[in-house]
Image 1 (tube, rainbow, N blue to C red):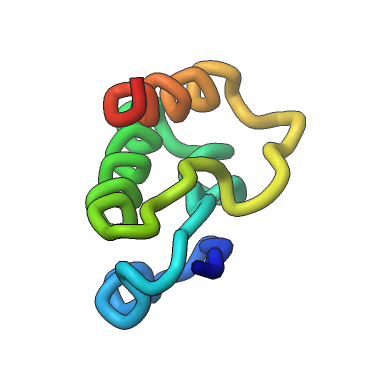
Image 2 (image 1 turned 120 degrees about the vertical axis):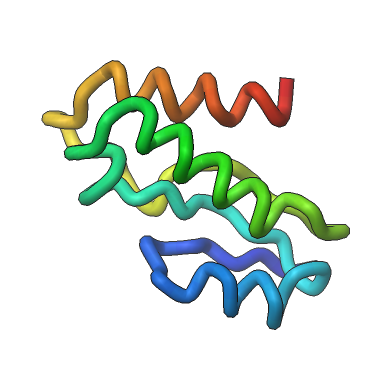
Length: 90
């Protein structure tokens, strides 16, 4: 089993269809858009989308960001991301 790091891709659905069950996906929360400039609700929606697309296969999904979190990222958004992942993994 290999892993595929999701990097702010717009092809999430295509990747899920083509590689779901063949690789373990990781990351994907957009650090330049949603996490940095979105609302906590938008961050949670993105997390839910990622888990639904990538977390339902044998091989799974490792939740996380697409890259390093920028210093100016609102703390409320980072907390919202972790809370949303915990809804699935707690």
